[in-house]
Image 1: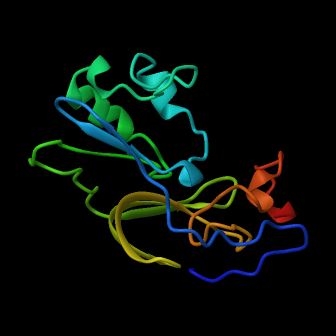
Image 2: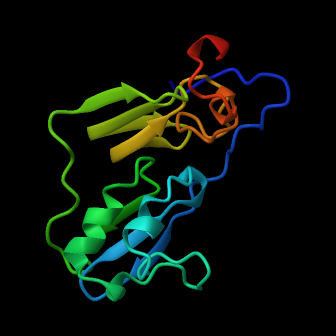
Length: 159
């Protein structure tokens, strides 16, 4: 899954090391990897007082209870949002058993105790949306640059 062939007009592969932003709170730290965000909006709909795109910083981890913030972060299907306690304590626990499903758009939605190999080595993950078409410039993660960006996602034969 780490290598794919991009079609004409596809974005070139991203080669810089992933940029991860940290938002520290008293009871939880939330991290955000912008290039993995697929705009599912689970965060802004789940806790708008914590996740507000019109504000800077856009994430205020202390605007809700740490347990509630963690619950909403776990809804992020791409894994762009993650969390950890600021002073030790339990990390996000992976789903068990590991599950893999194909979305209507063609991405592979994977949840569990994962080791994902990409251009920058192996990363431990709990939630990812992997590219199912090979056109992503952020392999092996989906970036909506291939057929999954097409508006008619429920016609599998056209992908």
